[in-house]
Image (cartoon, rainbow, N blue to C red):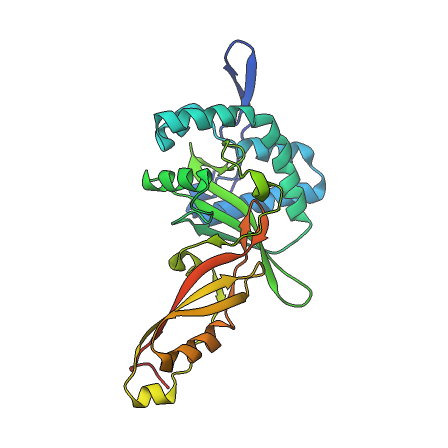
Length: 297
């Protein structure tokens, strides 16, 4: 079966006396069976979905959407998130089947309009505000050994700048990749954030934000500091703008002889935009700039 994409049709499982919920066992290419990686398979799936969208193949889009939903979800959520939390998530997930089946095709139809490069990154820490229940749930899943992957579509604007669009988190369940959607699990973002009115920057750790770096300028070692044998770390408090550029900078600590060089360099840095509920937001973080006398001039 090498090199052949295999697609399985939806089955049906009765939930309670009258409720019938569609469950798809595996409705996506099995690239990893042929020696592929998570990135290979997820990108193959994204391309298949956007191709179907461009061709107007609604039947295929529906099939892919169902395939992204978790089969035997009650047992999986309880095993992944614990008995109590898993039961709550499963109950919310059951109610979201119709919504997901309708919304996922719309997602791919929107993505099909913006061709770009697909990027898949294994998640070490959810890229969400730590106070959100979805962050807490995904972090718990990671602690329990669940491998999560984030999928983004990177597009190049007319002026040459790049912008990214998140396509969500995915994990392997029963031999196929499924989407873990915050709203579908009853862990969606409410209030101002849900309506797009979130204005305050979210707080991300320096290590998390560093992994999102797109462009860095190395600081020039101040000659006076070098002559005086001054080295060390300058810690900066930074607000990253919605487009990934540096909006605000202030020194938190560090030798005065090194501070200006750190500010001049970091002011030029660019990060991948951070999205909250699909919308770009500002990020509050810290950056450590290390000056070593062993570094080249």
